[in-house]
View: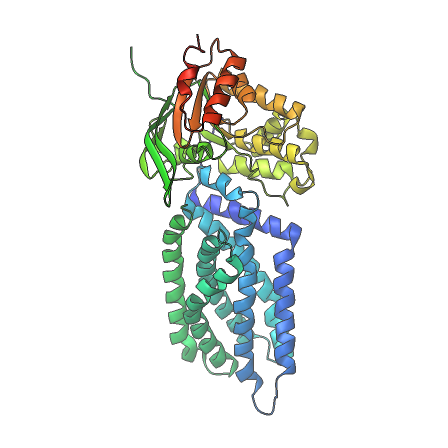
Length: 231
Length: 251
């Protein structure tokens, strides 16, 4: 045996995340499909918008969260797909890393993946709906980041559960979307208030709820994850 | 004499999938430096047994220990184990070197790049180090997979049909590697249905049929042809009824 110092939970989590991002960077399949979907959805919503009935500030939050919810599913779907192809997951499971660190690594990879998509989606949304850039969009970006944490926490867990089934593409949204609801509800409420130009203090109760859901989902899903890998 | 802790010990291991009993009451003990070749027909439960030893499956009944410890709960124990399967456990988009280095980092190897290079040289694939795995043939992928499994120099190697897809050079590299592991005091558990390949490296042999180990032998002085004939009669018999026919072969 070579002289070895077993890496810690966060070190291995980062290794797993870096590996996943390297694979995605090489293939770009999930990123491109999520990006194309997002831009296409933004276009469709834009062309069905009657400005004389609904204002941009009322319309934009709904569009943002619909696009984010469904583009997230495209990204999450591939998360454990790469592990299943040649049973790479087995190599991870027999290695000395903890199952929790596999989950955290996958979640970090998904978080960066979804954040990268939002880097395109948020400016595109501002462009389509003529939203004021600067402070409001910076706050919206912060809300998106908080929401993505919760979505990734839940989605990564269900991606691991669904991947071994014959109907993974169907099962992931079926399992995830009900758990996305509280996150999306809080985030949409907060975004609506910010884009309507109201003070941030009005959004604060929703943001507190969002942070609470994030904490609950991250902790619960990290603890539940090892059981999803049992055959 | 002081009793030593077995490198691998299975006691009454049973695994049930629904109503099917894949592994039934298996008792097995391997000392350090031994190599057990586990033979059996398709569906005999060999892979399930290996996955239980590797900690990938929980036994329905019974206990498994590696060096006196449970692989499932002990990271340090897992760090001593390498697993080679007919499934490559590689990431196709990454290069051979990236796959092996990734494994080295997971095991905390101090110089992952050098260790990966060394493992790939051992498997004679160093010239393909920068090639994405998806561009390699099945046999070369298997060699990369073996390099991945041994990059941290495990003391226990679990092998499930490791010769799958390997050409003569690849098979020779694998056999050399297995001899090296044994020479260094390592332990091997080799699951295969190819008797010749198994007997080439094994110190002990066992036959598994319908989830049960029906025969065990010491390989020293074993007549491979007679063993193969007896093994075939067991497999064709299907339930291990012909197992007594092997008695005396190991003389």
